[in-house]
Image 1 (cartoon, helix red, strand yellow):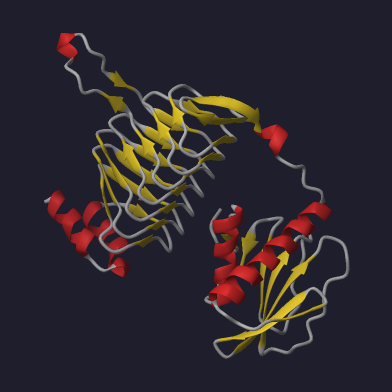
Image 2 (tube, rainbow, N blue to C red; image 1 turned 45 degrees about the vertical axis):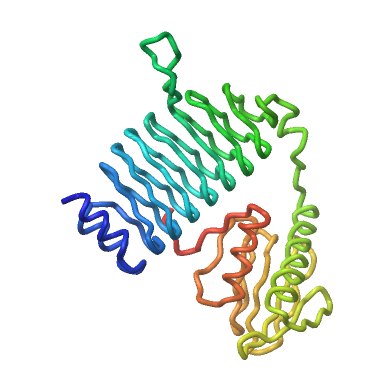
Length: 324
């Protein structure tokens, strides 16, 4: 009967899948969870956190538990199978066409990512063990704030610490210490995160927000939407779907811009000023880059900029009404 329920969920339209998973499989599914076409999960126990997204044509089949944290994304064409658990933290990302074997437990921490076409194995065998050949089993643990770029291969029994970057096409055959940057075949430590990461003063954070907004205007507004824009006094104005829009930054200490375009103008802002409160009147959608919060809305430009922050700059912004 369990298999029948899984097949039914696999074929069901996406809006019905969370309800069917709760009803038929006893899954704990959070708010605003999305499960795409021909995607599904089969496991002993299933728990999916708020705002997570399992995209089309992805299938997870584990005889253990599957636990996926809040705001995590499992991309399309991902295959996970095995006898043990898959445990994924908050704000994690599994890239398209990634393969994960869970014959032993696989744990992926908060704010960690596997890029496209990564492979994670928890067992290795082919030659007959009874004739003296080796067999290896071992869980894989990936810490918090780990980025495995595209095509990384992780061997059984590997533990990766926190705040680690693994360059694309690397093969990880041994443990990686926290704070390391590794690459190669087999992977070797080449530097540390402390040497690469900048300290962010308020002025640098303001400059980063300005760079992100300029890039979004160029890539998202001009090239993708093919819209004409007007830039003046650090603000960008354009029309989209019959609405007037202004994009701007609220810097950390200088005077904020005026909001005098009336209630018909929608304002989307990147905010680096602590505890800034938007004025009443015009519809304003701030993306707070200090608290990493934003109001929930159906506004397409606000949604596009939030997605852009995550996709191109790794900035994860939660909704203001989300449960903590």
